[in-house]
Length: 482
Image (cartoon, rainbow, N blue to C red; front, side, top):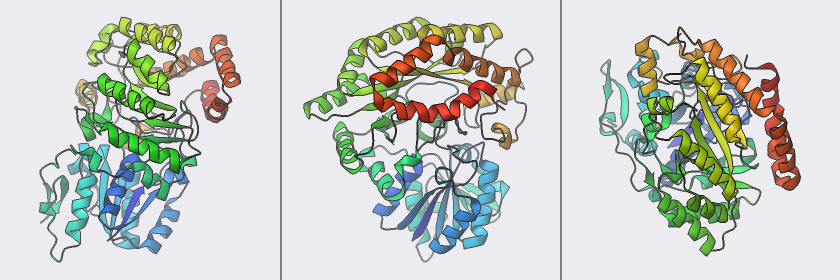
């Protein structure tokens, strides 16, 4: 079977794979990692698969349709997000008209709202809900049969006799080692120079060593809509083998980023991974998502094994707010983590969300001062963004704090985040303005500027990353979010 895996055209450099999909202020472009995993599974099954990342490759709808007509897919799988869903459906309609192939949508938004999605257009033949590699594998196998029956495909939503049917869920994948290396799919289908994460050395390779997250933050999108609130991991042997492959296949890659929701959720496993790198003499620069509760001994071992940076959700300086969003961290614990990370020599990219439950202008000011006190190497400040399928979305909807349910309004015309949570005492417009103010106060400090210049002089490998991020980011610093 011929299968088109498509990250659809939308805004240039729009990242659907992000936990908060948008066009990044720092120029970030995520790998289409989940489409890539599914591509690898389908190729293992013997299908002819074409993976196209339109936003990263700057392909228009016309480009995609021309490509699709040449490829002549039997099945097309389109990734989606809340902000892009209206456009994604239009792409699906155009693709159906051009190729008459079977159209399936995947991703966070359609997993949360499969019924709504199928009601939007008869063009959409099915929705593959949640973790979808094996759903698409089984769907392709079923469609190849003389008499296919969609009811045999777990995890699928579709129409039958003018009614929408939701098959039972596909179990989450427990044996992650059975999946192909996603980096092998990148090698065949993608150009790694198209992908950029401002905190990481450029170019970098993004992989995951595990899926899901055991913590219960109310805002977090992927654990609630796709991969579950448990941490399923690959074996250390399997991860080490992929690391070795990447070092051989991508000599130009400066860093590997582990995109697990919380790579440090199992500290024993983290130390085991680090020990294996050291025992085998694997020289590797790497970074990961972490929680602000990792002990110094683990951080020191990570640094010894090549960890350069951790991306950490700090969120707020107000303990009551951290409790409200079930972050599970403490303000004092965050301070200790930052001290320990600096002592270990690991850089920290701090993530802050303004507008969480219980937020006021006073707590926002407190968080901005906290960010400057902690002094992470880089920081991001987002207004609260809520998505269907998350507890936060239901909470703010029930409170009447959503200014719209028009999903196209989740981003601005340029693709930047557009906060749609507005309270009588703290409007969405004010939240965006406070985020702009926070960035200016954090990044325009003489201390930060001097530290960044010193970092570039000390380690020239940092210069391309800093320069690439600065080109986009300083526009927002000077002019704010439009």
